[in-house]
Amino acid sequence: MKKGFTLIELLVVVLIIGILAAVALPKYEIAVEKARAAEPLSALKNLRDAQEIYYMANGSYATNLADLDITLPESKHFTYSISGTTSVFARSKKKSYLLAYRLSQRAGSPFSIACGTGASAGTADYEYARKICASLGADVSQLESDSDPRWAIVK
Image (cartoon, rainbow, N blue to C red; front, top):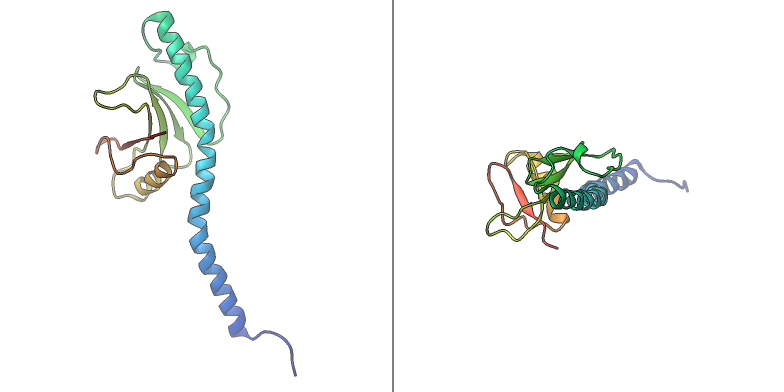
């Protein structure tokens, strides 16, 4: 009697492994991106604080990162910027999403942290950003603007 596996048995095992990988890989990718987002959230808090200090000293928010008394960490995954005098944000270098701290509250909006994207609704980048934002605690059921999609992070 010969011992071993038949070709069919090996194909079934490979098929099962492929199905498990196809189910687990998207969840793994979201978990990795969520872990990466911890870096910019911390840096953005420091940027926000630096902007508030600048505001107290000068009566207005800085419009240039160089004006702030802060050294940002080197990041392989995010770039940091100031959007006029309204927010500081971190944009992902590889994926289509960003995280932002608002410096001034919009009327009727008690949220100061936003997660968003520049991608158009219905695109793969938009849906990916929506998943990332939801995993970070954003209320993705309430879109702030159709032209510039942002979701408030409720913490």
